[in-house]
Length: 287
Image 1 (cartoon, rainbow, N blue to C red):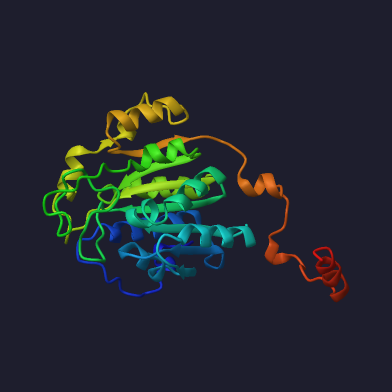
Image 2: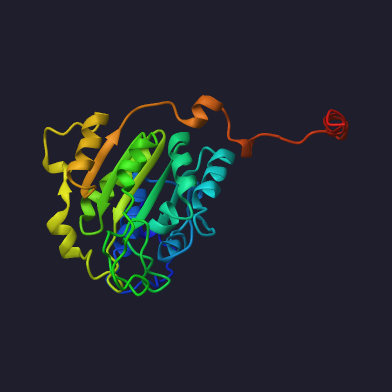
């Protein structure tokens, strides 16, 4: 039986003590062990920032990409080998600043993979300045009089883009975090999981205590229906995006199922070589 230790490569994380990312790393490892994902079928891809180190601590295939580009890399990997369990991860700047267009189009494409946003509402690696998810008025070294920008709402943005699985978690709610990651990986389609992860060094506003006082736990509402799109949007609006749990999920054929069919073999298992004559015939068509 798999354990979370099986999904650790024994590299010691360099995050600040108390960083919420530790909890997310552990939740991914526990979720993978619960699903007993074979190590040679497990792939993690990250971008730049504190969150970018995540792939460097997981046992399996890993790729540390460039800023905002974890999703195109991860989608390419999944397209080449549909048998892999692919997890992409990035921070709020990675996914909703430089990588915004990739995030939106990955959501609407609905490729069968999981995207985890490590959301600390600040750029931590570059010593603390506002991200697209920082609240209006947020004071940093680069905004000493407070941010004048309105923050993006990742949940509402994802729903509007056509998400088939949207969940939100909090580093302080470990059991719920594991559950939504397990169900996100199991979901046959694109899963986006926005996780509120306190930055203990540079964000002194959105702390563990602040989240505990402000987050609404959907699991405590027995009447909530996560299959109801309008209810999901209403919940995000009424909580100002500060809610945790599975917010929305629907069944829809994934991109690869529509493109190749469920019985199709992975591209990595196919003989894609062509003869010299076939290659030259292809070139001749462009003359």
